[in-house]
Image (cartoon, rainbow, N blue to C red; front, side, top):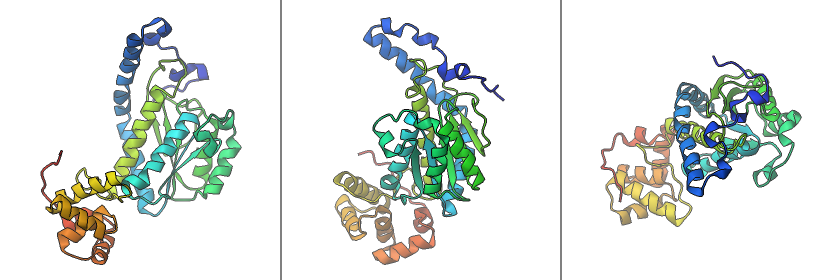
Length: 310
């Protein structure tokens, strides 16, 4: 158990980094090398927390399967990264917009400009969660690199009182402000390259952990077949091309035929695959998928295909 810091100055993310000391005297290539070397340690720092991340995914999968939601709560860079991850779920996995949502201290305006002091208003977190309608069964994930953001701590406390499961993602070995949560993910990123600039190493670690949690959640609820994005809903030319290639790979159809099935399916890759594999109509394919909770593998079984890197 890591010892809890007593003051902000004791936080690792507030310490001066000896590897970037007097970085302002370095040449451009030397500065870039220092930044790159510091970034290299982030993946290993995240690796040390994999057991905790796994426990977090169990909570997020449970929330989705039981018809509830996942809510990221943060301020500044942490809040923006949470909103970013939540926003990317619907187009990537055809996930309902309610499944993943992000709250940032200061509201939507804080996404594009700094709202000074917003993170220091714990009462706003309660108001925001009440507006969101957080309830028992939801999963609330607080994100705070420093582990001391009043807005985030308040949100986690209130969410727990509402019966929601709670996850706390920080970028220090132990939280400055203690808060009772179901899972604590403490990524030890060490001192930032520019002292206290947690948009850097801490931001990178946060993005990595959020990607791991949301992606693994989507995999476990059947949004991926093999490593293919089969629950894709095509909304532009790029996705039409990607969707057609996926359908071709899993159905044995050529690219042109796959595109025709994609059009018949209403732009749903997963539906088109079932239509092709089962020689059925769109309505029949949708019914088969509904019977298996949308899990493509449970409908078409194991399909042996070669990797398509063309």
